[in-house]
Length: 639
Image 1 (cartoon, one colour):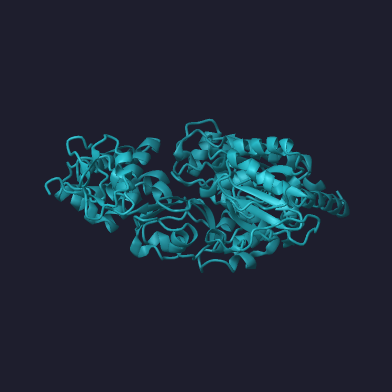
Image 2 (cartoon, helix red, strand yellow):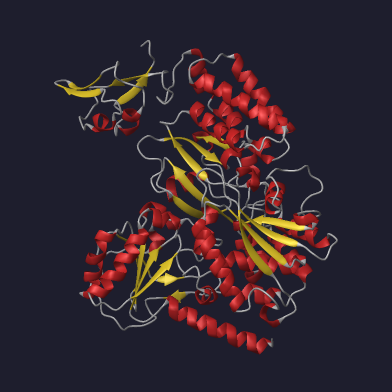
């Protein structure tokens, strides 16, 4: 296909996309990612459709992905011609008619209104002042409405991998193109493949799956390996507890991953791409398959891409609900229809991978970074971050935090800025620890919470960068948390190698003894020895990193283990049988919350306040957690 023809086709798609993104009149968009649907966005969407018909209001109703502010789902965006985009939070079916009635009466309703977007700044598509696009609608706006850039949740973020999520319709190829999509692929197909790899290498991009291996180096190894048949794989088997940032990208902007994989396939000489997707992500699977179909229909995938000699196909394969299949050799075995077990390396997949052919595996975020790097250049990406950790990192932030969600921050940002600045802090209980890196990561105490996010820094303190970020308040017991992560490791171990199969079970047994008051001081030394053995003797990353949460908990929170062992006491009031509950009547504000949540009806109101029946109390700890002023505390059984 001639370049003039390609440009004409591309410009036509872009024009359609801009008209779709910024239509005349009113456009109502509902966030319909998994987090939105769980919060009831599907019912909200249906009610909007019915309400527009009932009120005879002309407006376009569309869907989008995850903006990241999951705490406020269902999110609704109202774009008014010549006025900007208004973002509403927690819009249920019961809020829809009041909102639509306000629009019909030429007013922007104030209830549940979070902020306004006056200007869209697409990373690749150029800035769009949406207040100046048209001037066709007169409408009253509440005074003092803040811009989205003023919200703490968004003010510190820098969106690259999540650049289009919450902005475009995820299955609209036209809207993706309007945001600069596939410009990078057009550019790449005119480049020498070696130059593409050199650009990725010079950018400093490292794998966002956790190991942090330089992406360009992996691409180079794959290209240099002998063999005409090669594969590129997107590892979307996101199995870490509390992690859902990859899902958010796939549900909100699938074309960015498809474009990145296509560029990678061209650079490495691969003809086939596979997205290995976690089976528990049905919405992402549906969106990806539709996006692949549309990309093929428009010539961005399939045979003779954009009329050239390069052909590339992508297939979605669902995972087998096994965390170990996130390890690349186990993932390959799973795709081949074999038991999802890791194998010794070398040979590495770049030399002998899927079906014995050279294979490059990168995760979702890594592929999503590729198009901006090619389009904007390696120097732009390299200018962001730290000396050894370039670009940005996407996290899902969950746990004891005011605003959970998906955030993207420049490398080098202090962890405390994420927890306290972007996500509003841990609330009244205060911060105890942050867990980073999933089951193979580690717990960081408050003393380290202001360290910068980077591969090198986190590795030094026993954490990892790959997975989400779990915030733990002072009400959490670190023995219990270590036990929780080791239970996960035991459940997900494939059992192929003895150190992981038997070592994780023995560590779990010791942790249970400590949590249930049967621990002895010698157990701590055994835990350390077993953890070291697992780290150096296990076959794959699951076993090698499984002890990390235990080792970091012992390093930074040893006093809690000693309290469980020496005093048979859980200071956080979590481990049953190792504490009893006491109400401080002098500080109690008589709110009654404790009595409501008491699972055994052990709390009753008396003339002197509230009392706890120690016979009925089953030590669930609900009252400790719910008390807003910490008037209920765990004490030792003998006190």
